[in-house]
Length: 274
Ligand SMILES: C[S@@+](CC[C@H](N)C(=O)[O-])C[C@H]1O[C@@H](n2cnc3c(N)ncnc32)[C@H](O)[C@@H]1O
Image (tube, rainbow, N blue to C red; front, top):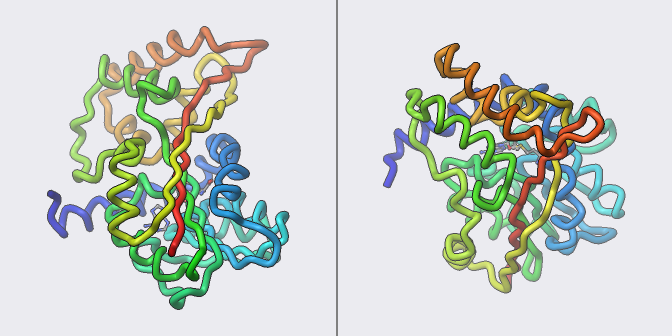
């Protein structure tokens, strides 16, 4: 059990990381995560006329997809740099700086809530869930995506394998919730039940990270995968060179015509406020 101070430190490191790496994430990883948006919005039951909260909105692709379905999105992210990117990319849509762990939206003000690859970054996911259940109208759905475990997802398996083989995970980062906690359906069941959400669904999605060979996988993680990017940045130079070489060697089999197509598996979970 982590103390309140540890959770605060973890939250602040994540916030600082997303502020610094907002542009890198948007350039290297947002297209990958965007592949999950349509199934995510289907699971959240997003349809025309709905007011939908796009939590942890990043550069705002899900908000745009909500608009294309005829809904009214509000994109919320705690990193002002992400909100600025979203506002620049999608003028006319509403984006605000806000913390998923402490939502200011009124009770029952949303028809649906969607969170694409946000929950795994929260210091206090249970607090976020209480707010999500509060702001949903009765019958409204919440859906989120997170990454499947490395055993299931090749990009993470390659990068974390290279890090464990040639570097160290002990780089002085504050302890936080396990990165792959919600890849476990049992953890999701407990989380949803505690927030009072019912009718949980749990599915996997196959995505693909397309990046230039030979080092695109390493570069994408270095540029925009906050927790892993920070761990990579704190390796000794010789270790980092070995990690890069190992990631290059392991991703070579996914190369076609100069592009690496790295399979990545996500988990999609949804539930309903009764
Ligand atoms: C992996 S990115 C996903 C962005 C976007 N949903 C997408 O699909 O491209 C995670 C986002 O969550 C945001 N985030 C992390 N913790 C947050 C919190 N406590 N409150 C609001 N946003 C948060 C980060 O700033 C970042 O933009």
